[in-house]
Image (cartoon, rainbow, N blue to C red; front, side):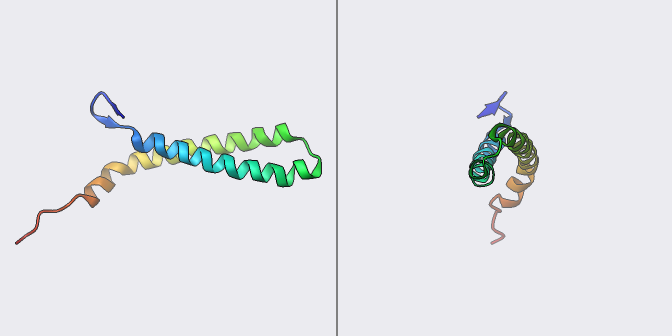
Length: 82
């Protein structure tokens, strides 16, 4: 997925989605174990986790997108000197 043929946003999108799914899975289990099983209020816990998950996913996505050019240069195949 390129924007204007120049910027590849695949790392951003993939990192955001994977972080979100991972965090949502953890939050779902944590809410069930810590809130549902004790009879607590589920909605406030879900809202709190959602804010944390979305913030973390956004920050991770930005960091990965910023690191991609450097990683591509470092991992690019080099011409042999033979």
